[in-house]
Length: 184
Image (cartoon, rainbow, N blue to C red):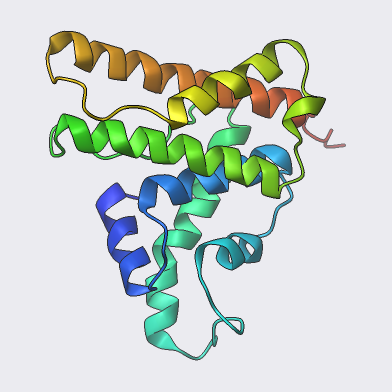
């Protein structure tokens, strides 16, 4: 599983303007909008390259490894019948509350951007999916000046779970489950 800090280091090495949480949100949004989104579409969004990466550049290939792993893992998690998808956020034991709260806001911003880049128009989603997008818009503007206490930690946990389940619901709405092929 791709670690948050490994992805952060890789993005810095690749001189990406995005952070790890925002990148995973963006990828999740792109795949929720269109599950067939290729890895190269993510590269176009995350990296400001004038040309495709040189396949002979060993350093570039190495720096892209965590991004490629994240793509593969996210695609598998969104298709997981056990609902194993999780937003990639800093570890609770290693990151202060404010950083984790800020990362959740960035994750949701990236997700909303990815949906838009994938062609999803918020006005086209009615009912619960549309309401979820409005709620996500509010979460994206989250105030990181909240006091850190047990209640704030519980609220952050609940918000993260709300986002996780919301993404799964949107994914199901936009990419309905397809039965596995029948082997004969």
